[in-house]
Amino acid sequence: MSDITYTNGIIFHQGKFMQGGFRVSNGRFVSVFTDGQADETAIDLNGQYVIPGLVDIHIHGCFGDDFSDGNPEGIHRMSRNLARLGITSFLPTTMTLDEEQYIRIAEALNEAINSARDDSARILGMRMEGPFLSEEKKGAHAAVCLQKPNLELFHAVQTVSEGRLRIIDIAPEIENALPFIQKASKDSLVSLAHTNATYEEALTAFHEGAKHVTHLFNAMRPLRHRDPGVIAALFDSPEITTEIIGDGIHVHEPMVRLAYRECKGRICLISDALRCMGEKDGKYNLAGEIVTLENGVAKLSDGTIAGAALSVYDTLLNIISMGIPIEEAILSATSIPAKVLGNDNIGEIAEGKFADFIVCDSKINRRSVTLGGLQIS
Image (cartoon, rainbow, N blue to C red; front, side, top):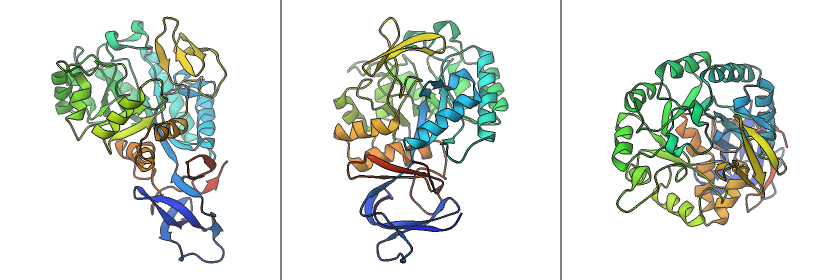
């Protein structure tokens, strides 16, 4: 792939916008510069804004496909569809399932990664949301498949996936959770999720090796003044990262603003999207449960909110409209999730990173997407 230079743009670089450009070679950024350093062959961005490709570390499905289906072609379709939306890297996420289904999904993941396509978002591995969750806070997860933390299952999935199990979710108050966290945290990021843990139980889990909190405010003990739970434990632990669903349905606007004040620089913006993302209102399968999508809200038959129907790009625009500074919002959808996964190749417009970027207007509305130096939309 030949060198390409872009100039006269407003580039998101090192956490802020700057007037300038960048050069791409062999699918990576090789330099970022202020204007006046490009030659006459450069592509003129005409003052458009450029941000890194987005990174979604919690997504179940989209456009009719779901990672829990265990279908390599379905994973490929997810990858292609997400890439066109500017989500250039993602961590496909399971629901709570029977044990043998996790093995089948890990095999499908390997097949999809080993046959990855140039026009498709980067698959960053896999995430297990379940089955080690609290029945009390299970949300849309199937109660019949919940179980105590099981290192044999964890290691089996890690082995079959060739070490690609990047995040494992767990409720720290359930039986066997703490010894599981101690051991599993050596191989994967352990995240507290679907939990009724107290403040003290959460702090103990952090001490034992958990370093992340799943979809803040959702499916956890609420923040009470005499019983603060996981939320206050997170606020008091600056080394712990978290994530938030920014669809405007899962978390009310002032709570989103509270999260960004208390956890500045350590929030990952996620979609938590289901297969109904990008689809019409109707009924959809979620790991054996029926989910009804109506007016943008996905619910089980009992009214439980089951997940989300917006892409992480749409949630980025949402939280900006809620008053989150543009720079902070972009970081939470790009470099912060990349760093949470320990991935040094994505999430930034910087020398040596993959040339994944989005050209957009001043309000961050998407105009084009480039993945690995190749424009795909």
